[in-house]
Image (cartoon, rainbow over all chains, first blue to last red; front, top):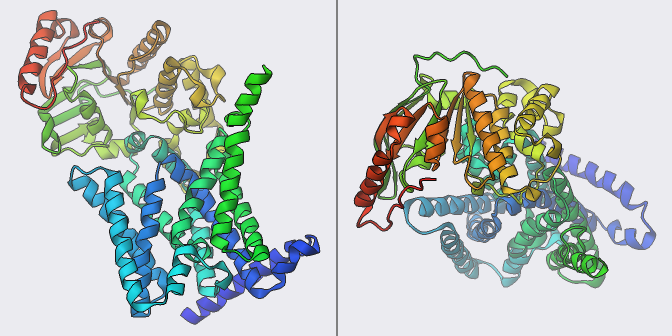
Length: 307
Length: 272
């Protein structure tokens, strides 16, 4: 049963890679050349998927002011990876478990003490992260730790790719089918309640999607830098548009484009892929910050000096 | 948009033994209350008296520590799910930098109804929902005189316009019960008159309108029924009798006395 599923998953991925390569091969040869390697093809597909799913969710992270929560969950994933490694489980099982547990723990502290959410997050995620560091220092090499912390997209294999694909399809489906419910929950949760929506269910559902996305992005950008992909595309789009629907599309596109350009630059200049991707998306933000049509700092300055 | 004829005998809101606590402080203490259907009702009380807490408990965003809430004689959650409770928040409660247009916000009032249609239609994106809902949005915006601003981003609206958009969202829901948290605060004269006209018309169409307000004079003039609360119910009844200057000053003094020694002092009522 599991083997059939795995076979089917690999077939789907090969099909996607095939379709992707048709497009890539239309590009000039210098651009297409790195992607003739099998590992680069897998890396490209992973980057596109991670860019898309992180980019899409980043709009909600920005609007819900969840940047710190994203940071917290991503750090809390580390002990899960370490424990899964100890027990011989797939890394994402442990990662998802500790990520989700930590976000629950934050809620428990917030509700039962007078400590506010920012402090609850700060203390929970550093504690979880410390546990991860301690376990890993006992069991694995520092190369391993570096890969988890900063990603290693060039070494991505089928299981991780399948997880990323699953996360992507799930997040996209949920956002499309429950667009209205998410909108009303993020904009005015009290009104959402007045219509009988189960807001705690939506709240924890969104946190689980966020956790899944972070786990699925581990190998591409790593624990530390995934926060950037969950914040910067949405922040950039937020400066550029006035409609939620366009913001979601734009942040997804920015996520994908940054991931692809970053991957290409990482290969050409032989630098860390996660870092390269994050630098590209940050460059997009800088451009929007300066030159956004209405809200850009330089744009407004130019308009003032012209008028 | 005619509402069902309400059964006048069944109260719109029936609350018994309602207690709501934040940490250790009681926001509402053993409140018993019956609000008549089809009336315009003003809820009045000093700051910190639990007026907003009462609304939020009816809306369902706060869980009562004790006590029961019935709406139109039914379990409150059932009435919420069937779209019979519309809510208008204070406007600071909402993030006005949110990337939405006026139309998008008012359409939120229809989401409950769209969900009730069931089937695949409930999953449609807002731009695809049927003309019936778009028409309800248009009518609600016409009622508050904002139909020329339909496609304007909400961040560019003035204070009074924001109130009117939030009111339109509640109107678009076509609910039997409207719960409004300070609908007249921070608006200019023109918006205030317009909002009161709209609310009176809603009442005339048979709906129940419950508004939390600081405006004693307005409540005396326009409301059919008043509730004076100060964590407990101080009194209910005809606004002219209940909201006498004497009663108000006694409530304010009582508020001050009962809050003395706690970490905050209730302000006296603003008599406009």
